[in-house]
Image 1: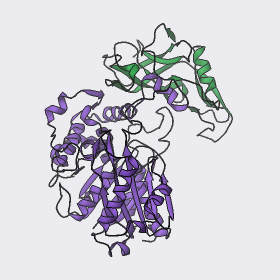
Image 2 (image 1 turned 30 degrees about the vertical axis):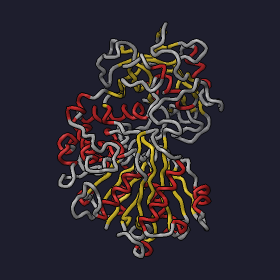
Image 3 (image 1 turned 180 degrees about the horizontal axis):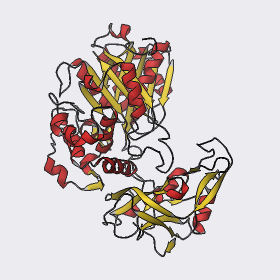
Image 4 (image 1 turned 90 degrees about the horizontal axis):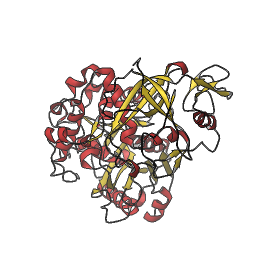
Length: 389
Length: 149
């Protein structure tokens, strides 16, 4: 379809991640972690890492393409791209940007990467230590409204209020991630199962988020290599073909001091519409979904805004049973995701979506034709992608 | 509107400083006078908060400030249990509310809800602005449930 120039033209040909660590536990530098992930992704694809001529990342990744290209001895750096915005909103967006570069002919092989060693830099979960603060943060931080969990809890509380939703959907999302992590040896929470009682008894971070509604903070790196479908077919792995990708933000979602007109939202309403429009599929066609969990409440709103159920069906639809691989109605976050595999800023969701297409997940869903990723609820901008066989 | 003698949260949190580009100088000057002001477009009359250099309704750069009553409604809320700043170590739980202002186009302002941190919160409750002075810093805008709530 001529309107959608990346549809069916690009594939993820290689994926890799380093070992995943607790925050501060990485034995090597963040830059080395990033290099390791890129080198291993090239090995997974069966290509020379020097053939990577494009680099794309997101969330102000500190490991910039010129330094990476120099370190790797890349002869030709032809695309160097950063998806604006924080959090995990740009994971799928970086893949979308890489795809655009491939279809435009800027590059032949583009790596999307994320390196994160929070122990070596600042933590996301801590408030600013500055004595004074200016701009939009001046309307929030002095009131103890400082951390990501605190920034999003009021959006979720409003959504739950508007639709009469209780705690159970959030619990189901958390339990699904921890359940899937128990079969994933890469997961930081592998061997540390979570029961419903553990969840209920866990401390509040900020209502409505218990401890286990919140992502971890970790060290590690991950990378995925994209190329055209034609080139991908000459490489080692079965290509995961990009059916659609979309990025963006709804009307004035970044209005300062919590003034977005639509407030109880994950910010996916326009993006999801564009995603399905490009893909030419419906939500019922999705076999498995990786939906970014900064906090479970964002996943809940994201699944609604991607059309998996209506707001008044959340309590019925969003159950632990429905989210479990292999046979749930919507197997969700099948690697354990940000809650229980690793907070790799959602790039681990994209590697998992590829594994589901390849048939190599540790919580494999049978006969996956359509594998979806939703990157970054409640931040601005957000992004999505859909892979097919 | 009333004034609070003590502060809701302990000292040590980042305190507001007017933006160096002057965008919100008047907002913080007004809170020191114990007045609540909201940015208002001189061209179309539209309100916006936080302030911006252009009116998002009509794109006029001719923006001023309108004093408002300080009467609002709770739009959303959260009860914070985990301290993310050393100054908050012994201050949890505390309440944050998002208040919409009907006499300013329903713009919203975040702040703390004064009183018992374990009080039940009802979205839609009527609240009023309370000015909380800080030594050597700007005056914060807090909120208190009114009888009409």
